[in-house]
Image (cartoon, rainbow, N blue to C red; front, side, top):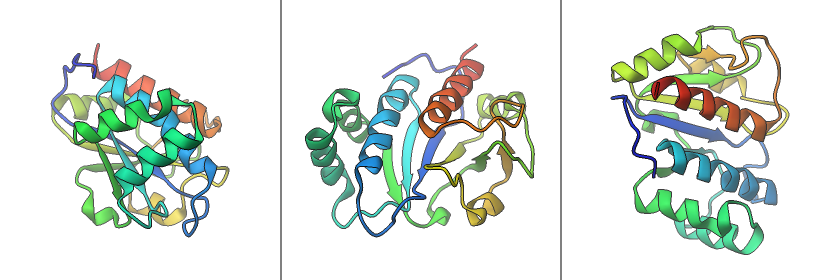
Length: 177
């Protein structure tokens, strides 16, 4: 794990399942497998919100990702996150602690990256909600967040995995300058 931590607040990347929440699909595995190495590198926590886990999510993820994707070295980074206590799954946002930030190209409660990362450096735990799929974040998630971040600053909608990488890269860059 990257130990280059110059900030006091914890950063959590919360992937919000906007696909089927009753049945597991390959797209779930692929999105998690893509986010895990980025979280591992940056030292950020990974939270999975409203995913259709029917059993212990940690064991399920390790098995599912290892068997069904080659992304993220077959589950290596998911296992690392689990071993370091940096992977959680929740269905109730009230179980999460920190400042809630919606990532969106259409912000209603706008906030810039400099303000958010300054708060992280000063000690705020921050949870960045990222919606999977073309619908983005559900309205109920957007309403419960404290801030809305348009990572491009120009209202440009990004493909899910591009957005995950860009959001994490910008946050990491800003808090580790």
